[in-house]
Image (tube, rainbow over all chains, first blue to last red; front, side):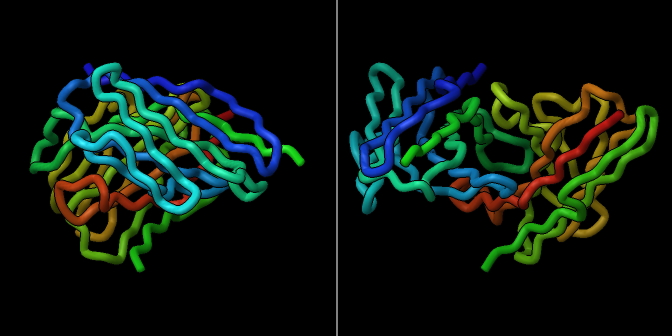
Amino acid sequence: GEDVEQSLFLSVREGDSSVINCTYTDSSSTYLYWYKQEPGAGLQLLTYIFSNMDMKQDQRLTVLLNKKDKHLSLRIADTQTGDSAIYFCAERGGFILTGGGNKLTFGTGTQLKVEL
Amino acid sequence: DVKVTQSSRYLVKRTGEKVFLECVQDMDHENMFWYRQDPGLGLRLIYFSYDVKMKEKGDIPEGYSVSREKKERFSLILESASTNQTSMYLCASRAGPNPYEQYFGPGTRLTVT
């Protein structure tokens, strides 16, 4: 079945770049997503990348996809204290739910801590 | 602006109690989901509903049931709560098949003592 792996923790200094990594197993993944969860809140979609792309940039966020190695990364430039959160990688794989629509499989989440 | 609300942010229940977690969305979405979130395990799908009165088991349905009597409301039921069901529960909804449009509620932190 599908499996999505992330490291659990990352600590960076304010102003540095953060790189959060994710590996997945489903080769039929069509979209890959990054969600952010701030303390006490639900998940908020940050960005996504289609599987035929290598890179996507959105302001301070850069997503890199290595489809051959099934490796996804999220780079946050000039990391701020407001970026402290849990970041989830998710893949839209080939599994179709009853009623249509693809299942999202989430990674374990990476807790990003930004230090002054 | 899509809104997904959950009835409680924090809930404390005793072992053996019947527990209802409520989720309401205001955008007429067909699909609604219940996940549980545990440290180191990420989000795991418990149940999914694609229409009123229609439901499908997710990856970890044991010990849970669901109810969807109205399109906007999806309830998660713990028939007899156990301590291993202590967790954060997240509801989500989406309009169609594209997960890009999946919106999450703020979560309910349930503690079973």
